[in-house]
Length: 378
Image (tube, rainbow, N blue to C red; front, side):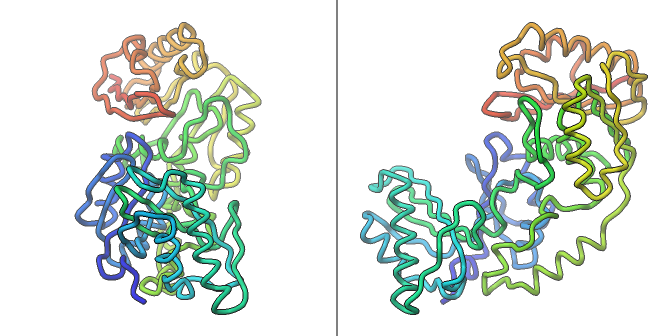
């Protein structure tokens, strides 16, 4: 059978809350068309080559879903019937492991776990009837990920084109307190329109997420560098050969990053950052310093990025205000000629930095109404 995406060339990218407009710009830059942001997602058009490019290279989206079939769905019995009728053997076999996730909105189906069980049963029953064998469910590391979204009693069955949640790149073995997600860190560099040649410094680097994302971006290393197989390889309209060719092209475009440096006063967290980046190609080039940023020589004519503590999640607002005030003094006194971008999960902290913002970009950070804030340092 021909799956829905093959005829419509329409896909859906799952995006973190607040990142929709930024991620839409990245999708357009990668060649997507008719890009339409919605809450926590983006609808877009892409031919097979662009779809593969998006799956491999997009840094801001969580998942890329390829619609397989869509139908009216008012009951669990009809959901099972339609799932059972789909040509799953075109995507998998009894030796393939799979997982099912569901989301429901204004649906007669009330429980996501039960809906997922119905979908799973429909797939398993089809294979058992046709082959006498059944594929196994693997929720941790399945070969195939199926997502079913039912909204206003209309079901859309999709295949995850990647290999699960893309905010887990594979380089973070440990993290510090209140870590920044990889997709939010990547969004900062997208908003900053970083030229990927200017040197980068993080004075409070924590577990190193901002530096890791800058290294990946500047080196031309895709966020999916650790993925062995992509879900879209199983789609007849995409195929393994197309994905393999795209990966070869991406590897050929790798380049040397600029100077990258991180500083943190917590030696244990700094060791985590060093270990995390050591797992990345070129991660051994990052320069590290243990100490308070106030005693650092500074960073001139470069890019300074930082995700200071917010004082909301960490329950210490006064300390957070004092920290960003000291950070503002450091930027003003020792980072002349640079551009600084701060990730502030509490927008009230902006007035405590003591510098005039050149730009403020709304962004949701861990459920907080935060801002990316730019400061031009003279």
